[in-house]
Length: 125
Image 1: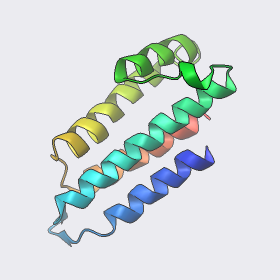
Image 2: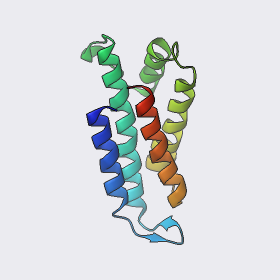
Image 3: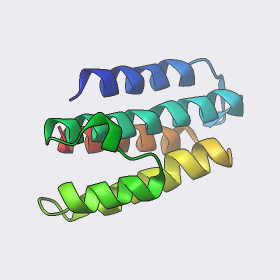
């Protein structure tokens, strides 16, 4: 697993621990949103590092979600067709629901999303 991506994922868990829990829900959505954003960044960092190892120059790294989709299709889906689906799920769960909309409160759901991010990073190392 990428050291930098792992560091971001660990930071996400630390941020999440700042929120209290009541009835299996995080009490402070601010920390959940921040943790989800940081976990999503860990996924993007892992993809960037994978692409660099495969010869993609830093200036050619994706700058948008569509750019990441294209790079994943070009460089990763050949080896693992599930990568795109996993990335899309993480994008929706962590970035959209968790960070952007602030919809995730359930402790088990948030922890599962962070675990999925770790699994994704492990797959593309």
